[in-house]
Amino acid sequence: MKKAPAKKAQASGGVQPLYGDAYKLKKGEEYMNPNQVAHFRNILNMWKDDLMQEVDRTVHHMQDEAANFPDPNDRASQETEFALELRARDRERKLIKKIDESIDMLSNDEYGYCEICGVEIGVRRLEARPTANLCIDCKTLDEIREKQMG
Image (cartoon, rainbow, N blue to C red):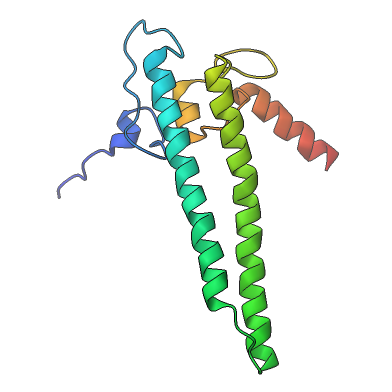
């Protein structure tokens, strides 16, 4: 029986980034050097562009599909569909705001460092979650506190 080839993402240390290839870390490389900054700026901009295109598609879809159905069930179904789309776009709007904040942090040399303890968040974690602003330890503690409070 043949073995399946190893997945590229596992070989690179975990998760495949949202866009493009995983950054190839070089031994002794400085954290958040110009190459890494460019890599993450590219990921963030591509992600934002995709979200903005989705917003445009939703607007056009809602304009094109808006109809005054005489049947109350059809009208209710359309309103439900539109409400779900608007909720998804609202979440994406908040995500776009976080992406913009991350792009600003890149410009200010603050990207990639934990907002609580200041430690490096790490290239692989940022590739998995480009808007991450907490290291894994602070995020874990934050989630534990959230569970205890809620």
